[in-house]
Length: 490
Image (cartoon, rainbow, N blue to C red; front, side, top):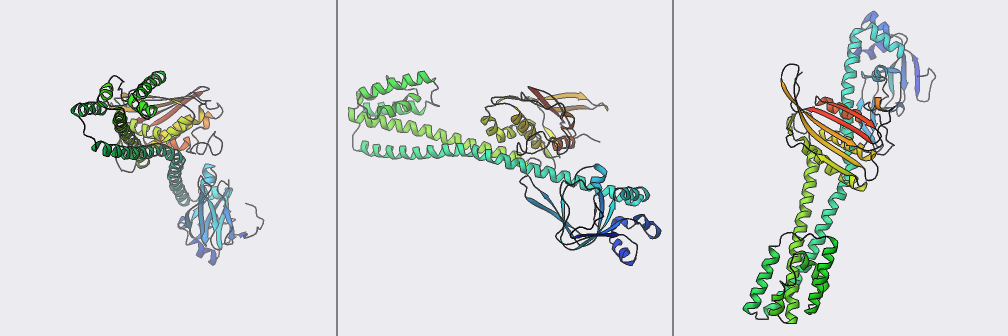
């Protein structure tokens, strides 16, 4: 930081006197320094910062160490939508800046003075002299840095999970809208059918049916109610069958023949089976009888559509719950195949948009995982989302799981759960491969993907006691994750 006086920011050389001694007594980090030992702070600077001024901005590479002696400051970060996220307020005695000096990482948050502040500022040389000459202070600084890095990692994982859920939300709404709209259309048509059946039923109530007519209608009803799922035919066969049925209905003077034909054909009924109705009913009543039969068949098919739509919604809800609530319990048993499947459901819309061929090879003998860690779904989200972005239109992604049995160094039998995600995308550039697991490193353009970094995935895998490896060349990139089925004892 320059020695020049800036607007809202004034500096002076730190001197030991009664005023500064009183300020230093509020600093836990310096509590062990007394008398002559405080002279290791000589040559540092006192910085005065007016309220509202920014000391540090997120992403800066500052090379100073600060101790807040008076006043308070707001600490905040920006989320993936560039919105400010307040973290906490720091008060006198708080020290910071060691992370950038010791790890060469950029500043992780923005600090703004909430009121007029006074800070003790050490440049890089003074910081390392303090670390060298004062072991007690060094221990406190290292402990602070360790705790802050852990908090940063936990916050980053939480933020990225929320970011990935937000990215998936649009696709999820699309997934929910399709079965919802189908069920709504089916319910509307079902209402129309029930109204039509009521009208035809009222008409039949005024007509006394013979035994032959009753038997014919009963047999036809039994036939269509036990037909099961609609008969599957290829396009040409279906068109021919519907045309022949419509022609037969027209010859029998049945009204709306072309509307009735597709529904009747779908049940597998042919015109020979309808001959009993043609012989038992007059032309006028035959139209009503077959119209009533068609309405019943159509209603049955619509109920199946509604059931399937609701089932689809239930499957999606289950997948979302499995994804969002994974890791809530302290200890849990996880089916890795189910975990991956839930993530696939969440990303299905992106795969359909690119017409991706998804090959799944899930081991049926995959053991359950017993763990107290969380974040498993974030691993699959990142690997699959990266693969989707990497492959071309109509690309190919292959996911495989398998168990590997082995004996560890202590002679204990163990099982590792292995998961492979392979794609035929462009591959990872050779120059980028050494940094692919580094924090905040990405080869994607801004706004592409979930923003969930492979660096965070690497740390999640480590928390599970596993390893992640990859190989990549144009047209063939594979990530392999190995996770222990049981927690590894240290």
